[in-house]
Image (tube, rainbow, N blue to C red; front, side):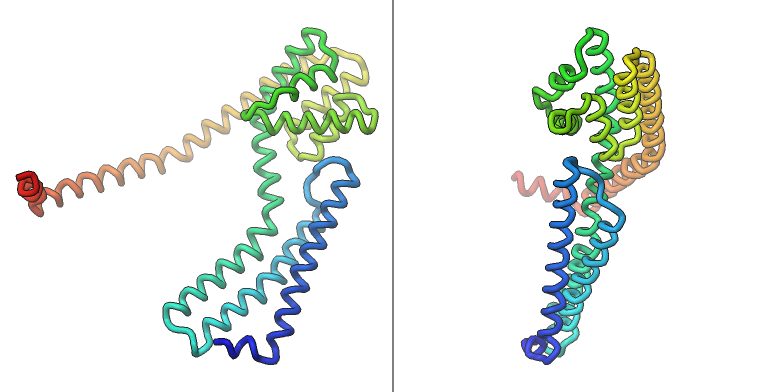
Length: 266
């Protein structure tokens, strides 16, 4: 097995892996520089995602190939060969698929959570505007006390307040920039209406009420559909648990388990 590392192609494979890792690090620094220049955290660009996939494949293939060579060499035993094959597959999936997809998955999860938090945020804005609170004041009150349940929305509002002070924007205009960067369409629609009303000085209560009712109806319908999809699986799990429990009791009785317990107790 050590002869593989002493082969003439080993240095070239090591250099290829090191080059792929350095390129991945450079791509991460490029994304950070882009975010620092933009001033807000946004979704990864198309070329950034493609670059992450290409670099992930470039780093995963040589690493998995090295483990495959170790597994197929004559010095590896049967158990070691199985472990090396499993490690090669796991390493390829993690480096080549999971790590490049992390920003996409994180953005999708964030959009789902923001979508669920949007009706509550709309209700808060409606109450605050009905009390004649200025937009900047209501946003500051929303983000002043961190709450775990709405922490993601509070961070978004805090970023909007920072952008407002840095670029001298209106409060809802700054919130519109942050919401558009997150990619949540429902939140973006609400903030667009707020920004338009802020520019024109019009009343937005009726628009917010319509948005809130629509979002609540959509979320209710999605929850109902999810329950309908999962009901057969839940019923199947209940049936399997009942069958396993009944079979376990029958086997316990048929094999004389009760008499064994009596002997143990005696």
